[in-house]
Structures are given as structure tokens and as C-alpha cells.
Image (tube, rainbow, N blue to C red; front, top):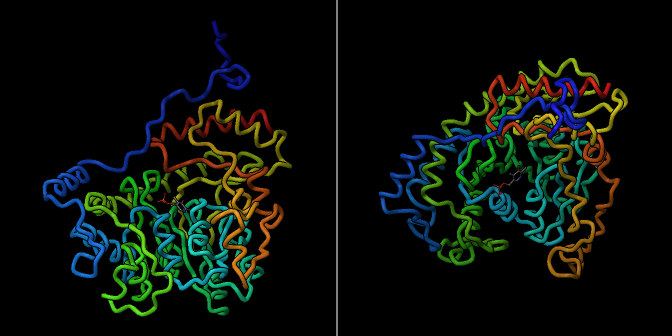
Length: 427
Ligand SMILES: *Cc1c(COP(=O)(O)O)cnc(C)c1O
């Protein structure tokens, strides 16, 4: 028989956990999506894409309708749907005329696809460090990484707020670089009165099931540039087969994929887009409750929202001031998880430390694309190149997932209480 623990005792020491409920996954869809999916099924058309230059090259009616809604919503000339945001990133990088060996500067504090999208075109990811207050790429570090091979900057709007696109735009313009945005985690966030993801030459959003809104799998690219839009539409749909019929002259990187979205997903997406602002508003309420509830805890730094930004809290990203705490992060993480706090995480990602970059093994075993003849790359991926991202990951970052589970106000009160309980043992 297990001893009934005292309520004030930590669960990791045998006490009662603060939270014992099961956490259902957040569900963003309902009757509207069901009806939309059924409408598509009954229409007899699950996709209308054809990989030939003609009326159906750009997809069926639901895909086009969803793209029009996205373009209007984000105030961009073009919105292009894809079957995942990883596909979107890959199409984006193909569109910008990269040569093998060209460099694209990005952040290591992101999901790996941000960097592999660069490698897919035999270009070289170069990692700049992040800003310790926003977790987004630090423009000063970007500036230091620019070489004569740099072609683009890929900013990541990590956790739900925009990178400093004003500073990045100034750097990009001064060096004639494309400015790109991976806004997978920040749809609906605002940056200086514009939606995050829309300051870049190309930006876009993920529609996978744990993002703010979703279509199961999917992604949306946005741009104002007609040629970049056309190149991404071509890469989405077997570019090489249609460049001739399309009379498109610059055929470099017109190596196409099948990145096409289905009609059911597009119909679903049109419904989901209408729910985006509500999903964002609820995440912001959740963050406000956490901010208020956790404010008094010493050594715990809540998410900082940069001037000109709103934050949509895909993740509520915190930091520990370890000199104010008597325990290390691993202990705090175990104690919070033991109390039943859902979606707590003690690491994020340092992409530059993945084996692929440490060993420079991507295409084949001989180090391609870093060994591309005439454009050999000695770019440094060793631990130490991004001290801010590394220290956060190694010691001081603490995250709470706010897009994975449904959380009521009562749930949040329990989560706050669990933090307070744990903090009694670590200050
Ligand atoms: C989710 C995510 C992706 C990948 O999106 P998928 O739709 O899952 O392919 C890329 N970058 C970031 C920052 C993400 O969070």
C-alpha cells in the first residue's frame, strides 16, 4: 500500500501531486469543419491538381478559395498552400535562386526543418545566436555571420512572437539579401501593426495538428512578389515538367516536388482560419493568468514581449535565474512534472548540435554540400558558437506548452499552485 502523502510534501518525495487529471488534447475543430469535409467528399473531388501547365495546375476550388482567404487575412498578394510547412520552407528556399554553397543565416533555436530546407538546395545553414529575452535570432549576431556567400536570412518567430524584422530588414537591404520568415508558431501575432510573417519577402505558417490552427498536416506561404509566388507554385507541382509550357526561362532550382494540399484539408483550413483570432486570444488569456500567478516567484522569468510585438504563446517560454534558486533546472523540472504540470519542458533545440552538422554528413558520406568543389565551406558548428542558445538549452530554459492541451482557468490555477508548491523547496 502506498502511503497517503501529505499535501504540502512534493510528489517526487512521496507527497500528493497537485494535479491528477488527465489532459485531453486541444481540439480546434467542430461542426463547421465536419460539414466542410463532408461537402468535399460529396462533391466527388478530393484534389484537382494536375502536374501539367493548364487550368488545374494551381489546384481545385477549395485550395484556391482557402488561398484567397489567407491572402486577404494576412494582407498579402499571394498565399500558396502546401501539404506541410516543411514543404513550404523547402519551396521557399528553392524559389530564391540559391546556388550550391550559398549561405543562409538562421537560428539554432527552432525546429530542424528550418535548417534542412536550406540543405535541400545544397546551400549551407549558418547559425546566428539568439536574443536571450525573446529567443528569436539576434540581429547583431546575424550581422557578424555575413560573408560574401550569404544570400538570405531566415528568421524564426519562435514560441509565438516575431523576430526583430525591422533590424533584420536593414541588414538584408544593406547586403542585398532575401529576408525570409518561418512563422510556424506565430500565426496571428502582430509585429509593428502587421501580422508576423508578412514583413519578409516570403513568410508562412504551419498547419500541423499542434499549431494554433490546423488541417491535420499543411502549410501556407505568403508573399507579395509575383515571381517568387510562381516559383513556389511550380516547385509545389513538378516544376521541371511544366517550365517549357509555362515559358519560364530561369529553370535553375525548378526541380519540383509534390507539395500539393488536398481539397478536404483546404476546406477544413478555410473554417480554421476563422477560428485563428479566437485561438490566439485564448492563448493570450492563458499567458496573462500565468504571468499574474507566477510573478512573485523569485528566479523565474516569464516570457518577455518585445516592443511592437504581440505574442501568441505557442509555448510559454520561461527562464530560470539560477543564482536566485537553490536547485538546478533538472530538479525543478522533475518536481513540476511530478506535480502533474502538463507540457512542461526543460530543453528546446540547438539545431547546430545535431549529428548532421557536427559531422557535416547530409547528402552522401563525403560531406556534401559543404564539400561542393570551388565553394568548400568551413562554417563552424562547434559547441560554443551560439552561447545564448546553448546556455538556455543546457541550464536555464523552462517551457510550458500552451497549444497542446485544453486548459481551463481552474486548470491554470492548479498549475500556478504547483509552481508555488515547488518553489517553496527551491528558494
Ligand atoms: C512546426 C514547425 C515547422 C514544421 O512545420 P510542419 O507543418 O510540421 O512541417 C517548422 N518550423 C517551426 C518553427 C515549427 O514550429
